[in-house]
Image (tube, rainbow, N blue to C red; front, side, top):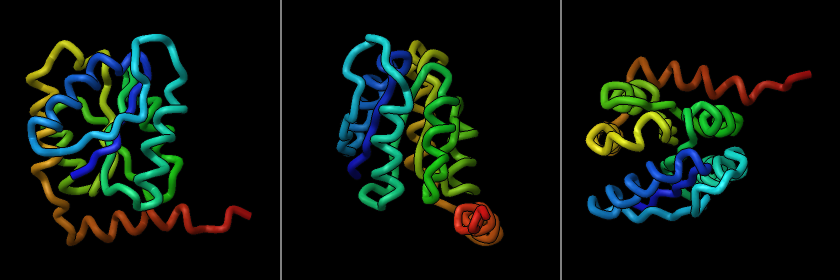
Length: 151
């Protein structure tokens, strides 16, 4: 699977670990930056992945920043994105199983020195399918929020 990936400076170190994992497991990461630990604005990079998942160009994406919150907030501005802040294996599994999340948001500063947890998160993310059923109804309710006329 082709996976768009991006980070800000605070997520850069963890992103290199994630990219290595993806390649080892047969995925092709497409890196939209940043390409160093020099300070940048996280929305600029979250937008790159979010627009492509929102348009349907890619099914899933991964974005990282220091806390994961900023990129997650940015991504969830797009109507077809269900971005999830994931910090452990169980949360990773549940966001796919119940929420059919399509963008994985990772707190780089929290996980950059814990390669084992990062790999567990990624294994759960890519190994868990959406359960559907009652969860489908809930996702449709979330999606309906972006279909309403705000006036």
